[in-house]
Length: 395
Image (cartoon, rainbow, N blue to C red; front, side, top):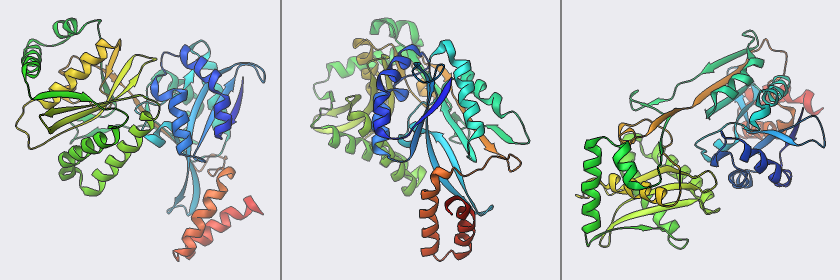
């Protein structure tokens, strides 16, 4: 097997048929590892990504595995040096899941080739955040077992004072009809509550749930995120909440460009009570719940219950097989009958004892731009150290 590097859009477009062929073979790969998703991500982030493409047995043979990565040039204040950091490329646009796209029949050998390539190339840190397949990571980590050269960390992601694990993704396996779901997957208490409030919704002359169209998506998303900000800004702080809302907007707009969004709004007359936004994967038959918001001043109870019930009903009626709540094992998600799927968050740090450089020479341009910023910011000592590091690479 051989490893090829693709890092321009034209090259990635050329991979489409092979990528989609391998993706179809791979039960571990979903929407956030699909070619069409990455086509949007890469087009929006030129120069910030590369794909490791593994061929089976050399040129002319079929591709068997792909690993999409992003790269970042980091200035270490403590070491006074530039370092290259690698991350899953999907995280350039908030992908909910990351990992390999790989033919399962050759995954151990193919991922071994990836590991051998990475161990011989320059970088300081690699993270595999929200990786959905621990088995494949274990294949990769065999190449980084020397504690003198590498530090491998399995990092937790607890939020809300430790009450929620953001590496746990609750998922509903959906039956063929909604009544079967309600009867077989809910507790009696949740079943009664869902039926009661859904009957109330269906009988109401004022309540209605409306799906966004291409004409209304932008304004509906604005309204949803405004409601989300009202709820979360007091807890997260204005700066953090606005940053997250902006990421939601960017992330969801990318999926909307390829027709993979379902955004629904609950109205009471002309008043917007709440909204929910999901990503629709028609190929894998997944509906991913991404974000919701509600009018915090509304007296209508169980707005979230109505919106999730409608989303689950829609998913079942449209042949979806899984309703994925994505990150966080909040109790309300589990109450819908979801089972927990655990992700990995692994970080590999190259120690100074390792004799491979920590700065990729291909990223010298990034380092030079940062050095200019140092000079313009009157950080003369740091700029001097940077120049001494870069000079051998450009002289």
